[in-house]
Image (tube, rainbow, N blue to C red; front, side):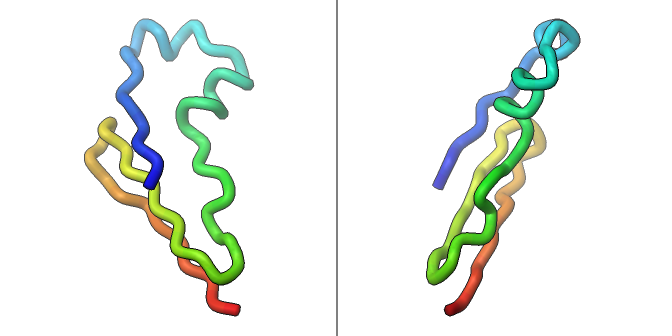
Length: 53
């Protein structure tokens, strides 16, 4: 499980596209024959993907 830390709103305003993607984009959500989970402390949510083979 990946864990994402919160980003301060003042810091988020200074991020470029790559920085925004690094902090907020959940990539590789669906991986074949795997369960993928990401916990975000920003909203205290768990985002998950399951892809059966």
